[in-house]
Amino acid sequence: MSNHDRSAPRALPLAGHLPAAATSGSVTTASVADDIEQLAQADQTLAGGLDEIVASRVRVCPATVGRLEDLLEIVRVGVRVRGRLQRLDPELLRAGGELWLTRRAAHRPERGVHVAH
Image (tube, rainbow, N blue to C red; front, side, top):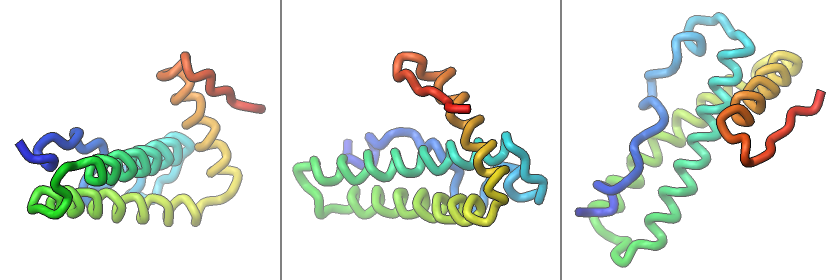
């Protein structure tokens, strides 16, 4: 089995398949938090994928090309999400960020993530 075959399941949608709230024009605190989570997952997936390639015994092979192509799609989605976030009203972005932190803390209580008010 190649490194490409063992890659983690894709946590992000492929390019062009963004959440409805992100494409419909209705931006809410929840959709901003969703975008922040999507961006965080893209960052994590990219870092893990690159670490996996570097740790591989055979880096220059067809499986590496496939994995890099997968990572490139994830980066493209992340770039679009980041662009949307950069265009938001700062207060909406802050509120979405707080909601994202609250969600993360609820799913990872052992990490001790705290939201400052």
